[in-house]
Image (cartoon, rainbow, N blue to C red; front, side):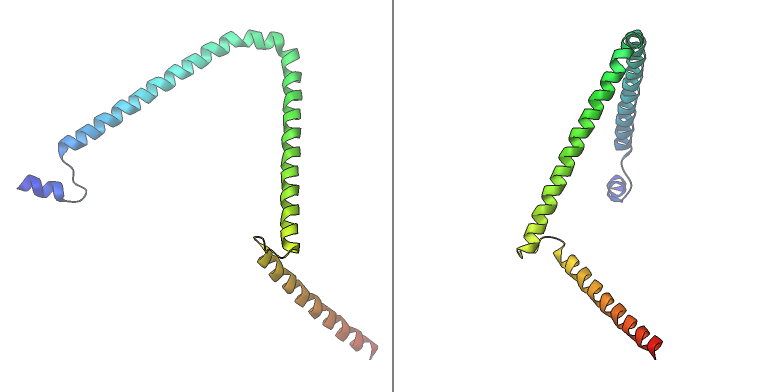
Length: 134
């Protein structure tokens, strides 16, 4: 009866369940540590083997990599700007034709606020002009 009450209390687990969880965690953690050590060793060995090749071919590889990366960045930027331009033009088309694309309500509110401020500034300028003349 006491064991049944202990297992029903929140936060309390049977000892065997705690041992299983700890064993599983130690096994998984240990496996990952061994795997990371093997990966580090393989990386060091491969870098040791590849370094002379990189030194020999670096006068060719470095400019080639720079050229290819610049070309890729240019093509990606061009495509991104093209997509942005087409998206902006389609949004403007939807706005002009009255379809109310996302964000058009905010644009209308900003336009109205701007118009109100422009009217206020015009009135202030007229008042200032009348004060200076009189």
